[in-house]
Amino acid sequence: MDIEQNLALFQELLCCGSNIYTWRYDSDGNLLSSNCPDESLFAKAFSLLGCLDRALHLSQNPGQPQVVGTSFGLIWGVDYVYRENTFHRMYVIGPAFSYNISMQDMENGFQHYAGQDISLAWKHRLIGACCRIPIAQNTLFIRYLLMLHYCLTGEKLNASDTSVQQSFSDVAPPVERRDRRHVWLAERALLDMVRRGDLNYKEALNTSLLISAGVPVMGRDPLRQAKTSVIVFTSLVCRAAIEGGLSPENAYSLGDSYIQAAENARTYDEINGIPLLMYDDFIHRVHKIRQVPGLSAPIAQCRDYIEMHPEEKIRAKDLAGLVGYTEYYLTHKFKEETGISVSDYVKKAKIDRAKILLRSTDLSIQELSDRFCFSSRNYFSRVFSETVGCTPMEYREHGG
Image (cartoon, one colour):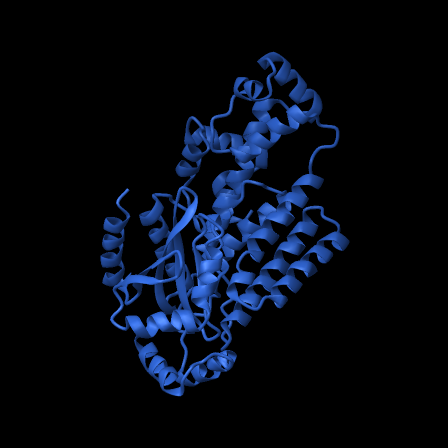
C-alpha cells in the first residue's frame, strides 16, 4: 500500500475539520516532515516535554497506536510502521488539548518540568501558541488515531483493540452535552458481561469507549482525571464480578491491586493499559467459576465456542468437527454433560446476547433477528418469548 499517498489524503481530511497536524519521524526520533505552521515550536515541545522519548519507547509494542501527553493536557497520537519486524517510521497527529485550559493552568503545569532546560521566553512563546490548539473530545481523537492506523497499515481496529482509549481522560468543557442514556446503556452492557463471565466482550467494550472514555469531572490535572476514571471503572467491575459469583474477598483484593497500580502511575503510558487488563482479568475469573463442574474438555470447548460466536449459524456437525467427534456422539455427549441439547444451548446463547443488546442499543427486532441468524423476525420473537417469558419489545420497554 502507498503509505505516503494515504497519509496525504488523511492530512487533507483532518485539516477539513480541525487544526490537528501530522508529523513523520524516523526510528531514531528525527523529524522528517510535518504540515504544522509552528513546526519548530511544537516539535521542540514534543521532545522537551518528554513525549518523544515515551513515544519511541512505546514502539516496542507493534500494532498498538498510543496517546502521549503532558502534565497540563497537551496530547499527541502516535502510530508506527515496521519493515520486516523492525521499527521503521513513527507517525504522529497533534497536538491537541484533552480539555479546556487557561494560560494560568499551563503556567502551573510547567512546574512538573522544573528540571528541564526550558527558557522563560520559549515557555511563554509556547503558551501563546497554544491558544490556537484545538480541544479534541476524547472519542473523536481516538477515531482520528484509528483512521491514521488504517492509512498506515490497512488494518481496521476498534477502540477496544488498542490501549489508546485510556491514554487520556474525558475532561471536556462543561458545555459539552453527552448522551447520558447511551452512556448508561453501554455501561449496563459492560457490567452484564462481567456478571456472566462473557469472553466475547469486545463489541460491547468498543461501543462503550466510543461513547465515553471516563468520568467527566472537571479538574486541572489530566493524569488525575485518568486515575479517577480507572478507579471508578474498577469499582463498578469489581461489584459486578461479585454479583457474577466471584467471592468478595478475591474481588476486592483484585480490585485494590488495580486501583493501586493506577495510583502509582506517573504518566499516561503507565496507566493506559490498566483498564483493559483489569476488565479482561475479572471477566476470565468469573467465567472460570461459572463453568459447569465435571465438563469434559471437548464439551467445554464446544460450549465456549457457542458462547463466543452467537452471531454465527452453529450446527452440531460443525462442533463435532471442531473436537473430532461424530455428530451423533457429540449431541449425545453434550446433552449428557450439560443437561441441554446443542440446538437449545445455541438458542440460549443467542437469546442471552440479544437481551444485552436490547438493553444497551437501539437495534430493531428485525436487525437482531438477522444478526443472530434466525430465519425470521417472528421466529426470533417466538424463541425469545419461550426462553425469557416475554417478547423482545416487552423486555426492552421494561428494562430487562
